[in-house]
Structures are given as structure tokens and as C-alpha cells.
Amino acid sequence: MGFKIYLVEDDKNLNLVLTSYLEKENWQISSFFTGEEAKKAMSTPPDLWILDIMLPDIDGYQLLQEIKLSNPNIPVIFISARDADIDRVLGLELGSDDYLPKPFLPRELVIRTRNLLERTYGSNFQIQNIPPYIIDENSRWVKLEDQLIDLTSKEFDLLVYFAKNIGLALSREQILQSIWGSDYFGTDRVVDDLVRRLRKKMPLLNIETIYGYGYRMIKS
Image (cartoon, rainbow, N blue to C red):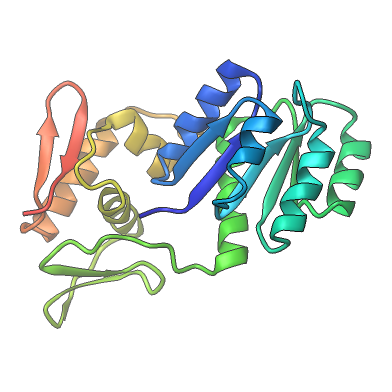
């Protein structure tokens, strides 16, 4: 199971876009459109907050203070479309751990979230091993019984991405963005080639082809 993240953003379209991007990382996202909604959820705290300062009911600074009073160790990413310098300084003074001014690319928020989670909780992201294979994400090795399997960096990244999304239909575009990043310029045919190589090296994986869409890994 992935990390639990609370997203507080009153712009409905932006909220939906950011939620979509964050969920692709296999994180559990609960989104809120008002500060009052977010306050009601504070009794069951997440692993990380993403908090917009400009809310329709509660000042974002006030909500940040309440979050930090309830649990000072919960990391918070502060986002704002107002004066960047003032918001950044005030947010950091009140305990936010990172600041992202609007407008920003959703992928940048994903990267900042991942980095903050790793700084806070270490690099032991939870993944599902795929029997009979054993995956160590931190050391970046894969074993079948006691035999190490030689994977390239991209092959390993794809394996971990599948392992974190067991049973989910993943489009070629999703895989392309996750493995190569949003800056990659090329065709999605590289995804098919990477999947083919992974299947060849790990024939016991159960990777289904979803024709015209992408792939899905299921447990054998």
C-alpha cells in the first residue's frame, strides 16, 4: 500500500488533475476543496499534506498551523498563486517543508512529493514482491530463488512500476511518463520494446497486453 496524502485545493479542475498525477504513483490520495473539509480529516492524519494557501473558508496559514500543532512531524507542501516571496517565507516560518508557487507542472509536484516523502520516511517505499521473484527497490536487485537477474535501469524501473500497480490497466502514456519522464520526446513504441525485454528476462511474470491501450501485471 502506498503513502497516504491529503490534497487541499479549491480549484476543482486543478484538484482533479493533481489527484490523477499523484495516484499514478500508487499513493492514496484524499482531496478536499475547503479548509473545513480538511480539518475534519485531521483526526486520521496522512503521511503528507499538500496545501493551497488560498481557500474559500479558512486561511491556509491557519490550517497549516493547526496541522503542525496536531502533529509537527507531518510534512507539508505549501502551494500558492499569491506573492511568491512572502508566501514562501511565511509558510516556512509556520512549519511548511516545501513551497511551490503557481503555476507549476503537475509532474514537478509529483517529484517534490516523492523527494519529501523520501527525506521524511527514508527510501523504503513499500512495494509488492511478485512471487516467485523477490524485489529489493533500495538495492535495485531482483532474485529468483538465490539467482540474481540482470536488469537494465529502465527494465528495473518498469518492474517496480508494475509491482506497485498490480492489477491496474496502465496505458503506454502512463508508463512512458513514469519511466522516461514528461520531457521525453519519442514514440510509445519504446514501451513495447521494454516490456518485451522484461518478459524475456523474467518469463514467470504475468504481464497482460491490453491491445490498443497498454499493459497490466497480475499475480500468477
